[in-house]
Length: 342
Ligand SMILES: *[C@@H]1O[C@H](CO)[C@@H](O)[C@H](O)[C@H]1NC(C)=O
Ligand SMILES: *[C@@H]1O[C@H](CO)[C@@H](O)[C@H](O)[C@H]1NC(C)=O
Ligand SMILES: *[C@@H]1O[C@H](CO)[C@@H](O)[C@H](O)[C@H]1NC(C)=O
Image (tube, rainbow, N blue to C red; front, side):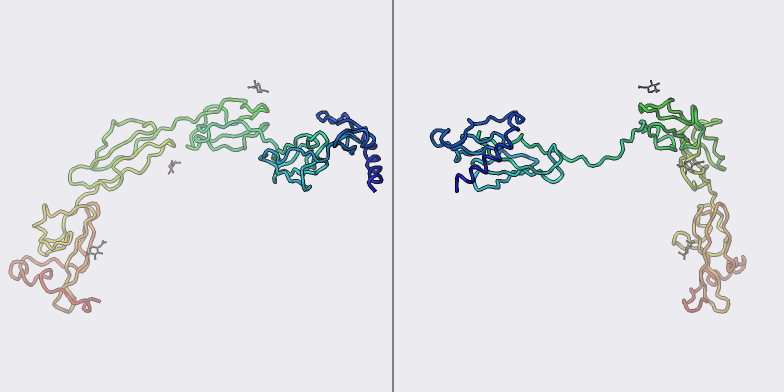
């Protein structure tokens, strides 16, 4: 039986024999025709490309192999001895130089695993076609709206984000060596026009015919006027002011004399209020008489820039009513019940 299978090996070995020499690194044990040609424990066995060779069948190849990051080795035979098979499989995403993800190595008569040390390399994802572009510095991106993708061989158009005119070429060409054909343009520096004057206000700044970007104008109001709006406005890069100038709002004369009113939650006689004036924005509550009942209800008005009117329901008491019957003044009588006021 053994000699029969040996014959089969002989044939396979002879066929593969011409390959000897193509594997640079392996050394072939002494070749033989039968066990008689080999000494001691050696047997005449087929050692693949080496053909029939004198080998010690029990001798083993290195195992386990030194760890590899990108591959896993698995012994396919019970022991790593002569003719044992070893599978080296690349981790997912990695392949061998020949594009396959696994290889089989055989334990040779020279106690080495067949073939070259398998090296698994990362599979390069199919990359997008190499889009070459010309650089656009942040400064340029911040200054312009750019029409075009800056890829090599194409043109872009600039427009100033500020809306200003362009100084330089409005169009540029991205050359194949990824440089721009022309220098980037610039935007004409915008200036702010003098803002509208503020009545009853002061500008705390040197008056100019034009103001440069970043210039601040501070406002103050004349005495007794209230600032309504920003205290400061800034010249923006697009030549606009950061806000409309403020207003200086006048105080209002309380349009009642012989009735008490509620100002800031306090019921007072107008003559007790300094100059009988309330500031802009003040809510003044007046007392009106119920059309049928002897009780009062309230109506409020807001002082707006010097204008404060009495509510339509308010009736100014006469001098006589005020002098003779101060306790019967509408502002002094009982307040109507909530149900009384429709
Ligand atoms: C890029 O190409 C242009 C025209 O082909 C050439 O004038 C320029 O000198 C080149 N620039 C660089 C940095 O190679
Ligand atoms: C200027 O820029 C400001 C803020 O970015 C914006 O609110 C304003 O509308 C711009 N003015 C003009 C004239 O474009
Ligand atoms: C004014 O004050 C009165 C009383 O506090 C209140 O009812 C009214 O809503 C206020 N009016 C405004 C416009 O704030």
